[in-house]
Length: 485
Image 1 (cartoon, rainbow, N blue to C red):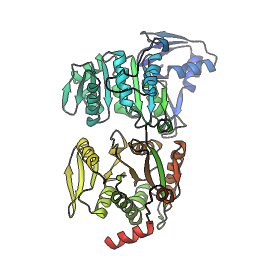
Image 2: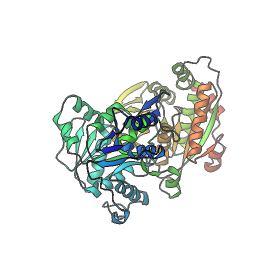
Image 3: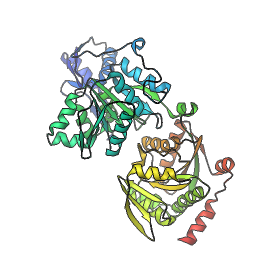
Image 4: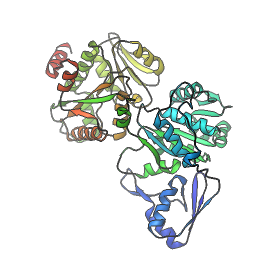
């Protein structure tokens, strides 16, 4: 069998028996639990090449690899990335090791580094090392601008595409994924030009490569160097779905994994301490997920009293508290309970609510809001899922996981917001929801995630009281808010 490798796709040329064997083995289960083929009309994405070679070797099938381009696999001895490679900072060991591992693989692969580990700096190092036209793909407009500022900070020429901006005549273009996708659909010559010009493409938050939008962008770029950056590449740390294999096909496998525990032990991240509170309100008798979540989480008065009470007490003792929710109605419910004009509920883009005798819509950029919160000596910020990725609040000292949920990636991202604090420890408050089997299972899955991350989790608030001297009585909090409601 011949494997003819192009930057994006690898074509197979074999006899009927060889192709049948490959087609039967090159499959993966999808999120729909059905098996899906990764071989399409005698080709597969080139990031899967090493896996295909393993399959062929396991079946004793002879094959040869023909490259249509020079893969540029470099020896570690030939790669020189000193600690001062980027001006103004000293690179950490993993910020040197990751680019070196990518270079040994021709500039292909995924770097999975925990939130707060400086993955954008890794992207800057790789870009400066190769010094060739690069496309840096972002999931949001504000992230594209953040990346552009970071590249410029390190003396790397960088323009931008997306959100109404088109500044393209630069070594690097920081682009917004949906702008690129729209440009491709509309036959925008600038979008095609960016993709055609790129010798390297870097996908920030590359777990989005499981979506049609991102894979369309990737399929239209023939760059030989293809890098993924993420704090949480796969939604399940143990199994690989068809969607995961789609991601790997575009970039290659994970070449560097930097878990949170390693960064904590090196002193780069704060250590999250998880404090659970049981919630055993009236049992919910239905088994339709949306009503269960609404009744058990969003509109659960007892639970919301605890969230609001914890946030208020922590703020009064000088903590900066981030409260994370999943639904807009949930954030609004908490804001109504707290009735504090200084508290903001931010739920996407520049959109937010404040309290002034009633809920008042307001607008402020995430950067300005982050700066405002950073300038406070204490405070409460309520955030929706927009705070799961790429919004850093270094002075945060407490996190309340008000939204529940079970997804490994989302839990990892949310805890990452806390671990990015500049403090040695950050206190995380979660809830063990007994009110429905679905919610109880989600609580158990979150605990499993904490255990896999080697975070310390406690059954109640006694450890928090021991470490801080602050006593929070859940029953008293509920009684106090019952009188105020």
